[in-house]
Length: 244
Picture 1: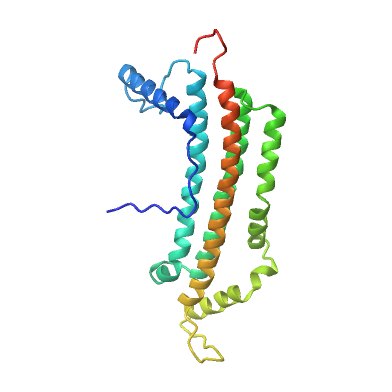
Picture 2 (picture 1 turned 90 degrees about the vertical axis):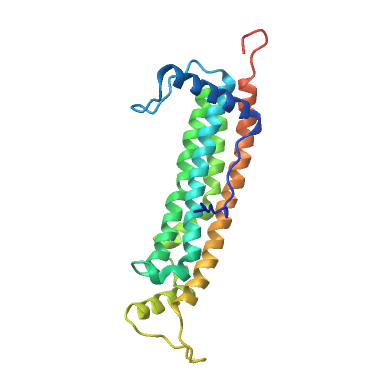
């Protein structure tokens, strides 16, 4: 069986400058396993004091890994939304409810970006990569970037009139007819309004919007990552005459 991975929202790439530090970390882990065995009970490796370069590499590894975990979850939601129009007959529950649940799940995951970034900036200050003022400015920039996402989420949570448009009305009515074994006829054409067609229209457009919002946030993350890399590179450089 081939594992298919959705890439509608691209992943955050680990900075090239700190990849050597990852290789050094891997060597330290191998040495720890040889010395102590696999840490099944704790899940933590007993590593020696880390150089600034290795410590910085681990800092970026946690940032990139946590970000890409969120992105993978968002891609799963988008993928599920795209296949809902064809898969709903074999799924348990209301297709209409599933659509809104997927939408809500997307923003539940999306908000984890902010939590992860706040934790990242705090760690950066502790390591001396950023001053407190720089960290505060970075967090504010990140918060401002959430404006569009917050607006989209609030539309759903507070049932704004925006959600009473034709597509959502059609989904409500046709889904109800489908659940009760009835059919809705188009007054002008006389054709049956199929739930699959209604879902196809609303799901694909919504999935496109969620994809674009995710990639917009990715670009913001890239810019902030570049800023952190430049600061961490300076902080990780050994002082002249001191050991590396």
